[in-house]
Amino acid sequence: MCPSKKVPPNAGKPQPSQTTKAAGDVAESEALQRLLNAGLTLLQRNYRTPGRGGGEIDLIMRETDGTVVFVEVRARQTADYGGAASSVTPRKQRRIIWAARRYLQRWLQLPPCRFDVLAREGSEWHWLKGAFDAGF
Image (cartoon, rainbow, N blue to C red; front, side, top):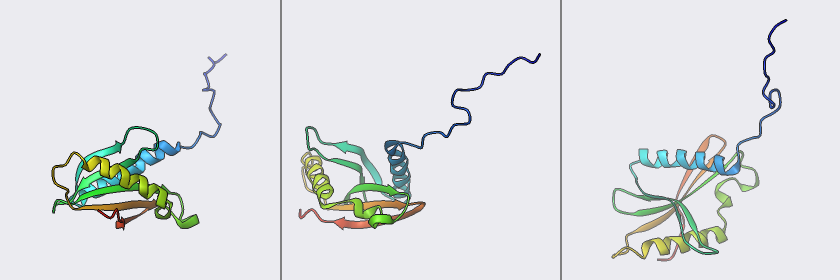
């Protein structure tokens, strides 16, 4: 008689797909690499403001000319329902702007700033420079 092999309990069963958070982290890392390759410098990743209703900024970068770039990263499998970039709603923009203002409070002099969106649909990336304006 052959010794029996232990079969993992999940063998043959479909594995759960990657969580939304994990997929977002992968997209954020890919976006960061694209920005670094384009010559930008990372200032901070996943900047969060305290308290309820606070904002979060995926990537804060600096251009070679000194411009501080606040980057929102979005990833979607398809361009359905407007695609990844259109998911940065006016409400989300306000929260990013609010967080950017908090981040800039520690600066002695306000640098030139820009709000970009890096959107991935499937495997295709779109970099929307100056996607929205903060009015400061």
